[in-house]
Image: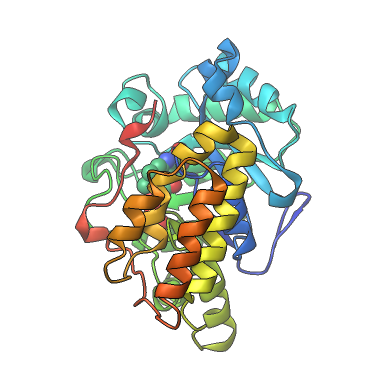
Length: 346
Ligand SMILES: Cc1cc2nc3c(=O)[nH]c(=O)nc-3n(C[C@H](O)[C@H](O)[C@H](O)COP(=O)(O)O)c2cc1C
């Protein structure tokens, strides 16, 4: 598959943009485990223009992660145009627009999924971005504002008409937030629309190779975007790829592979965030990577108290010895069990 200059495999697996999750260290881990294209966390267009430190920092991208897109959001045409131009200065492979974030703080500013209530505005915002960058522009959105105003079919056509090069659709409405099950029926219908020529990526609740295969076949999407299932389990990308190619499962990750991923994540975290935040921000990841290991708590409580790579690595060495040969059951992210949401979004 090709999106302008971007060459992708025939059926790409994308890492979803996730605020406070899909930062460069996490992206590095996902890339190493099979993600074909990735996005930054969403970046406020107003923040970029104000030169807010948090927004600027999210523009950091690295060669090893290409192709990578910068995701921006906002409800003002001029600001979106300007921020597209700012995003382009760091030379990403594409600029993605977020029309899907359901968080109140975002939608009340007429941004994120808030734009789903005003298609003409959505079209103008998109045009402003397309006009202000030579890079391919893509969009990520939801099915509609709520059940009574589902408008993704019109959205897909109109955004294609103003020049977007791919569309990722999360099969929920804004009103659903992250509740219930994602409904891919409408995503499938968009693929059936002969007017739609751009790639359509399906998103929502993919957490196993079987489900990826089933949804690929049933809804005919051009690729799949994965979010929560990759948190603590970046192996999901290669597992799905292998299953789609061979019909067979890769072996579950060993404790050696898990520790290797933790070390990789921690090293990148230290490189990117420095010795203090690099350690602090890594702490929330240990639980996810070590899910399913009996009595892991005793190690985890040490991991989250230590302050240097060497001290942490000592504990990881103990983990390797203690769990040698133990294979944790598949770390199936249970969407029913209260999934994380982007409430932290600023
Ligand atoms: C913690 C978290 C943060 C998110 N932040 C963003 C974001 O910045 N931009 C965006 O387009 N979607 C964001 N999302 C939505 C995801 O990209 C994705 O659409 C959603 O999680 C559904 O996919 P999944 O079921 O594979 O997780 C976020 C989701 C989560 C769980």
